[in-house]
Length: 150
Image (cartoon, rainbow, N blue to C red; front, top):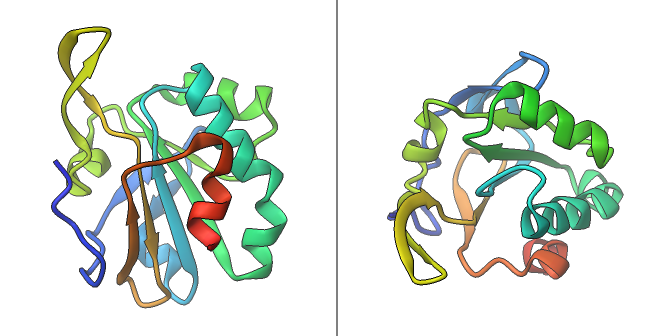
């Protein structure tokens, strides 16, 4: 599970979004980057979180932030999610879990009494030089923007 903490160098990553465009950490040098990991596109809590970020996207842009969502969903599912909710930021389709594992957010979870491996809803705020400014593990989907921009 997540071993990255505030002050760590963000891991190098490279992933493909819903449209087949490649994104890597180097693409965001000089900008603040929010990388938010969510378990599955179009599920209720993930939708609430993504829509909260969408509704406040102007606030992020005005403060020089870029946003990237990441889940293990297919490009098609990520594209449907983005289109259905008019999300203005890319969604990485990390089917091989390379980005998920680089950030350490895959591990054991419990849901309705069952134990299974999955993505832990976690957000990383990375500064202009690739250093992690914040790791949010207790994501409040309805107020996530406030948690990030506090």
